[in-house]
Amino acid sequence: MKVTHLSLTDFRNYQHAEVEFAAGPNLFVGSNGQGKTNLVESLVYLSTSGSHRTPVDTAMIRQDVGAAVIRCRVESEGRSVLLELQLNRSSANKAMLNRSASKPRELVRYLSTVLFAPEDLALVRGEPAVRRRFLDTVLIQRAPRLAGVLADYDRVLRQRNTLLKSARASGVRGSALSTLDVWDERLVALGSEIIDERSALIADLVDPVRDAYRAVAGGDHGPRLVPLLTVDGAQPDDDDASDVRAEAASGSTRDRFASAIAGLRSRELDRGVTLVGPHRDDVRFELNGLPAKGYASHGESWSFALALRLASAQLLRERSTTGDPVLILDDVFAELDQARRARLAASVQGYEQVLVTAAVFEDVPAALRTHTVRISAGTVVSQGDESQEWAPDEIVPSDVGASDE
Image 1 (tube, rainbow, N blue to C red):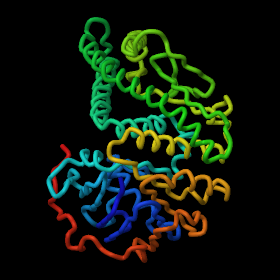
Image 2 (image 1 turned 180 degrees about the vertical axis):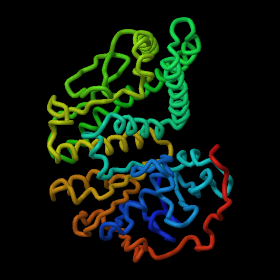
Image 3 (image 1 turned 60 degrees about the horizontal axis):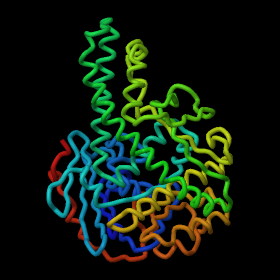
Image 4 (image 1 turned 90 degrees about the vertical axis):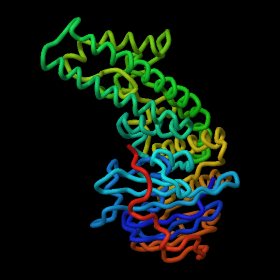
């Protein structure tokens, strides 16, 4: 899989941009704050329906305009697909697939990316929600149907929490809570599937993470991933779980979830919130038998986070029917010494397409500079291939596509 052309209109600091991409490595270089990350952010949004930098879509729309357009040509297995997305400031986003109206969430089926960015240090050092989001993003890329399962779980969770708060306020207890039993059943059914899928993903990541860490760091520090499941008693969202090891209890996930939620009902009624389920789970990352969070150095944490992304890319390429994911390395090389730069460059050269951003041209190994695009103040100053595939007046009009409702 590879991106061949990207067109942006009123996205972040780009009034208009047309960018050609080559197979293999593509380097985007320019001083800090010029718009390099904005370019790759647009591709990440198309492939995941979310930004790695902001939860608010309107933040990606250029100031004082009502909409932004991302337009991308993707080639995979000899097939070319045109993806178009309009982000609207005051209405639902709209999309098109090969000029036909589509839904924004459908575009993720046609573009797969794996991004490593400086923000990924939070995977190791941040809160459980960051690690849950990482796992769920990979799950959706492996099986897009799980996006619906996760959305349904969130909806049921909100309904259940609303009922718990209402019961707490009114003092309702006992048989009067029969409605809660209905929501419990649905929560357990959806949540058990998410827990099982995440657990399987964590198991699949173990060996690729070890290999990727060794490739980047030049040594094996015994990286390990340990699930922390609230259905088995872990409380990562309440306490520091760095010294807690949650071992899987006997019985199916559904049975353990149902048992845990029944046992916590009185506490949940007191607090007005659901205390168990995949929305509160975590995964602990270890190096040399110690939690990376709190014990790993900055360099070790950086290498672990990078290994997680490289491992997820490896899993996606192994199971993909459309080719490799597009691998994106955003401002990575500035944080690495010369030896790690060379090892990282060697480990990613086998991918169909690698996108690299850097402030300093010389920070990037020569093997990754074969197609260079220079960016300045939201403008593409120069690029390896100056040909244009589309004319500027072909930008998606403001009424394109179907809302994602």
